[in-house]
Length: 190
Image (cartoon, rainbow, N blue to C red; front, top):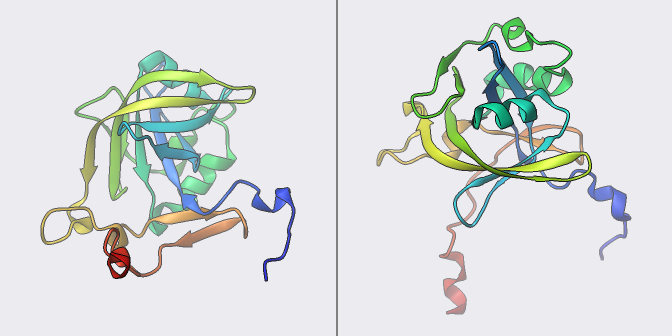
């Protein structure tokens, strides 16, 4: 029997990947934000929901580029800090963490060292809402550390150690075990 919890129980939704979105500031320093409101579109682009007043929003509009890094437990403290502190109020927030970045080979944005997987993107378009906008970004390249690749050179999501934001418990969780094969579990009905 399902129990009614009301509309507010959904909060920010269901557990989703925690991401670091990195851009360059006007002076060339690195800005990074914590983001858990992003998805891949059917066209293969990314749609990222970013606050209109954020430094990242401003930087994407100016530079037309960004990187999106998947986060594992080794970066949890840093990504939590990036989601707590504004780049407009603390311009050196990236430097304070001690993390390092290199320039992307494909777009005008930084690649955060230590992330197991980085998606390099070009700005496509923006749809402005009241407090947030959806930034559409074309994926130009995906760079992955060898440690997260399987024997065939493909990304193994369980090797990433990806952390997810859990809005129900207001915390971070990790992926569990692989429990099935997509487009295979249904074969008993075919």
